[in-house]
Image (cartoon, rainbow, N blue to C red; front, side, top):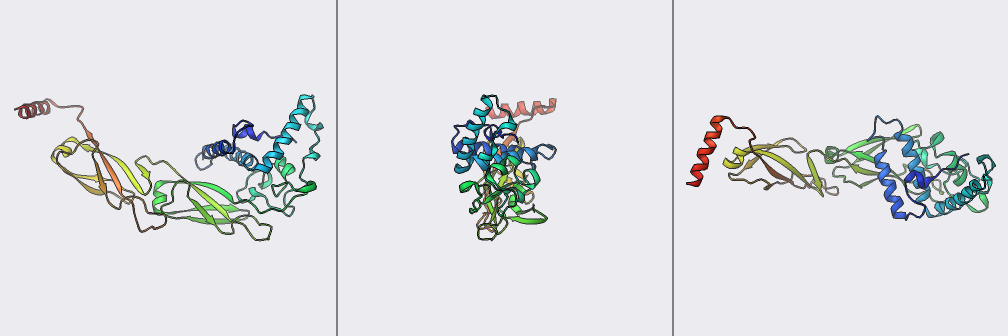
Length: 308
């Protein structure tokens, strides 16, 4: 069995703080999420390794045991020892997959044989926690958190995500107004706890950046190109919103950078879906880059009139 360097997997030093480890995990989890890399066949395996590394380094007790194991492993290597000669029995938890515990990976098919790696299971056991005298203690499982990525339009309308749990599937509703970091609780969707009842599962929402709109709370911001003549003379322009185009009246003499508000055309409030934020439209005046000879004459005449 090969030793797994969890610090290297997360790209952090062995003296990294919990905050640094968490930051590195979140960055890598977003980078290799299969939803964002549908054509990268290796992304899923990389994400499994990242999740496993954080499962250990993000837990003080597991990290402490892992650090002691690492020191012993590196001393063994420094003495010229080979992998086959390392005494893993001193570090084994005595547990094995499915031995009265839970396997965090089963929910989303992570790790070998649907769970974590052989290295993880050998050191920490199926319950993911080492007990006294080399036995696996049945502790309350941590909440399982899975990240899902949704678009701004899906956030505005609410959406569904289908998750696999063994041979079952879970259809999870993500409510309208969900923001980046919103957690959706799935009661009883996690593994069995020490009382024999299933624990909860949480989905953490990651919001994709939108090409048109910027979200700030429940408000949306949009940069809208406006024809110079409309800005000078006033007129009606069409403005895209998440529910379709609407008409906006631009007053005469409007300036570039001027912001206009469309009430109730923003995002629904997560707690009060019937209440909407506003859409702020920032005008971007389009200056003609090419003029015909006739147009140039007219502009020159206009300039003379303005001077007079």
